[in-house]
Length: 238
Image 1 (cartoon, rainbow, N blue to C red):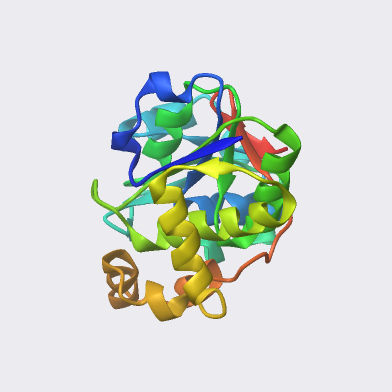
Image 2 (image 1 turned 45 degrees about the horizontal axis):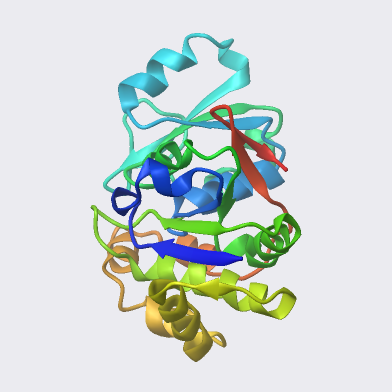
């Protein structure tokens, strides 16, 4: 097994993804939202790249079975039901609902990954479940970090490192340099990932917008034990 990690979705070619198991990470906050919503009973999540696409797609559903969620530049989209805060996706809100989600980085990373037929959604909330899924599949892996504004984001890299750290306990694998760097960065801060993540641009921006509770929630390791799988444009529990 060989693992490659990419700092942003823009760095990945479709050719690279063919036949690979792809893990998409946007810990702050899209993949944390997706994981939380599914744990809380959402029927499915449909990630889309654009606001207009999300709104148009919502018209094909009955109003009582659909929720629009997402953000632009970390702020809730006008007219949408929910923002990109996982704390809003509680059981009483999302149970049985289809969620159409569009975010600045995460849903675009998912759309990029769709050229693979084996795509899962990872975050700190489900590290061990993702590692166990990789171990069972036993094929080459591509980790796609969503990044922030097209650039490297430390929160995603720490999450990749956490997954790889857990995977190493389960299976021998080879990896590229960014995977190794992610692993060793996480290894150095595994007792408190916020000690390093607090220096990240994206985390600080979210904090300044008042989402401190989101940061605490999203940096909790292994709160959940599900594997969200993205197939045919829809994300459901594997």
